[in-house]
Length: 221
Ligand code: ADP
Ligand code: MG
Image 1 (cartoon, rainbow, N blue to C red):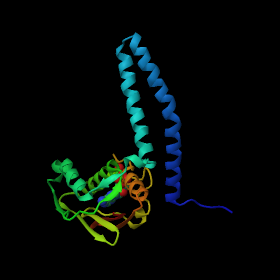
Image 2 (cartoon, rainbow, N blue to C red):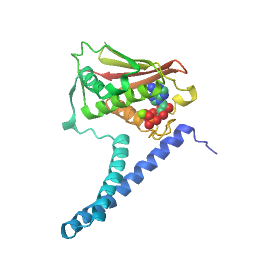
Image 3 (tube, rainbow, N blue to C red):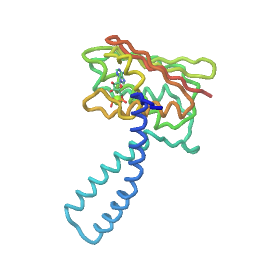
Image 4 (spheres, rainbow, N blue to C red):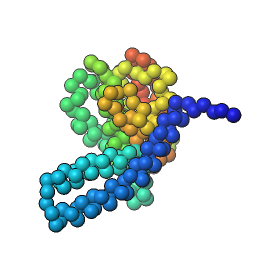
């Protein structure tokens, strides 16, 4: 029988193919870079430097795609994380972009920590806040709040931005899904894989023209 793939399934398989290609292409490129470096030891030429920097760009792109879709969680990289403190340290990165956005934050009482990979969470919240800022067209508000419930910390990131059409909500998190002309469509993929790899959940509520809330739930110690 014929089976039609849903949009989401299509994007998931595109994501898997892309990850596979990234993996296959990375090894030969890394080899080329190695030989190039050897060549540079015996011969200097401006083209060689240009080749090296272009290769590095390509490798960084591949590395980024691989990390987003398959974050590795080695035991030794897992540390207790104070999410509230991390969020606060992130916000100053956005200072310049927050001139038209009112930021409301409730980040006290975060004595209970989650266990995880710090960099992944920094990136994930960076991606969420960046999206929230980009969703706000003229002025608006971003609210970050948290509470504890049993063995879980709940974090909500809300914005008063453009919102997401209902039929698009189910596409979120699939690699390369973007509605922005300059978007990569990898931000939410990184968010989803990070939350899921740490045993958490994420849900999205959005109303067109009103705004969007990302609700994250993670186990705490
Ligand atoms: P990118 O930001 O590069 O487009 P993301 O994975 O971060 O990729 O987001 C994917 C898409 O999800 C965005 O293009 C946008 O359409 C939608 N989106 C994500 N966050 C929000 C938000 N807070 N408000 C409205 N739309 C959003
Ligand atoms: Mg984004």
